[in-house]
Image (cartoon, rainbow, N blue to C red):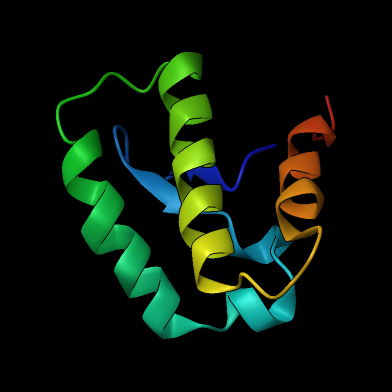
Length: 88
């Protein structure tokens, strides 16, 4: 699972996977707006392949960790989400 996921209700759209983020990030509306403004235009027109979603995941981690530089280990913590798999 990534911090960026495809929208299950709207084809071709991605979402910040806020349900899996720590509460202090999930409820940070200003950060969500910043991520959308910075990352959104870079995703327009790109196919939502695994590679694109991996790239978007890394970009969001960069933005979050830049904003919260004082939290040691945050990137590793958030990046570990990619090893969580949903029910099959």
